[in-house]
Length: 295
Ligand SMILES: Cc1cc2nc3c(=O)[nH]c(=O)nc-3n(C[C@H](O)[C@H](O)[C@H](O)COP(=O)(O)OP(=O)(O)OC[C@H]3O[C@@H](n4cnc5c(N)ncnc54)[C@H](O)[C@@H]3O)c2cc1C
Image 1 (tube, rainbow, N blue to C red):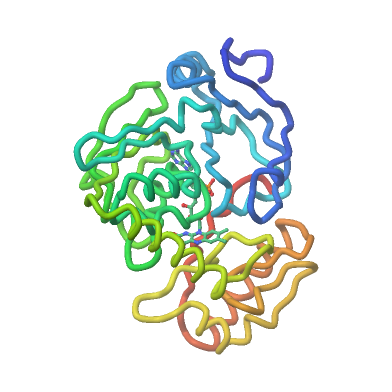
Image 2 (image 1 turned 120 degrees about the vertical axis):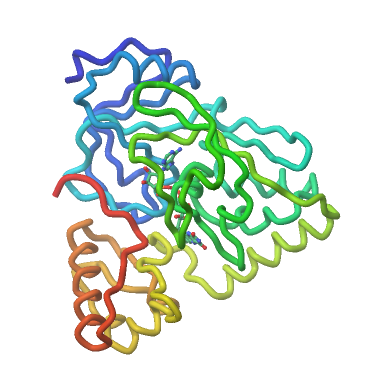
């Protein structure tokens, strides 16, 4: 397949280990990783590539369990500056999907972009946050997203609105082959000092209430309606399960803690936790972390 790849201006990497790109620090090689130079390069690549070849967009890797066998096809990473551009028009911040949410802190604080503070504390990229309707501190992407510019697998670019995306709890109805290029996020003009204070307060909350410095992917399971996943896990004894170096965090038992193990062990742990909660509490936990790749 590597012989038939279109000529691009960006970079191809072959057999690139994905554990370097995931917060859980697991994941075998991608057959091909493509880092487009810009939007036009991505479009030309999609138009010329073998249509049978699958595409997977990797954001910040903060919500992914990539299996040890790695990924077939082409993993696309929007890493160039072209995918991190931003500008403000009226009460909308337009921002490239490849931008890391953490790097929005300065933009949101200095410009007093009220209502976008929550986003700045979520690991990963804006594209990943849009796709999964990421949220925290009482808000989520669905509350602020006005429009998104997307590219489909044919390389065609179009704009969609919030209503088109079928947002739900940590969910969007995004077709699998759409790549988010840019999001338009609505804000309310606020005092810059106050915006900076909220961002710092959110960061402080995470520092004091969530595990720090561990290999994790954040919340492993979604909270079932009216219930906290961590409470169910504790009640079922899931917090004591260990597979190799895979366990749940002692500080927050809905957070995975990879102490140096394989994706296979982490997957076994997740399955065992689901089974324990099913048997003890009669509740089916739905994964929040997305598992992808070859076994
Ligand atoms: C310590 C920690 C804390 C966390 N806290 C929170 C939290 O408070 N709230 C919360 O919601 N989540 C949280 N998460 C989970 C994670 O940060 C979010 O789900 C995040 O939005 C994932 O973005 P990403 O760029 O890392 O996406 P990835 O993990 O790289 O990918 C996730 C999915 O998004 C898709 N995707 C990525 N970019 C694009 C794009 N441009 N176009 C189309 N699809 C794309 C991928 O194909 C994949 O399907 C946390 C994770 C960690 C590690």
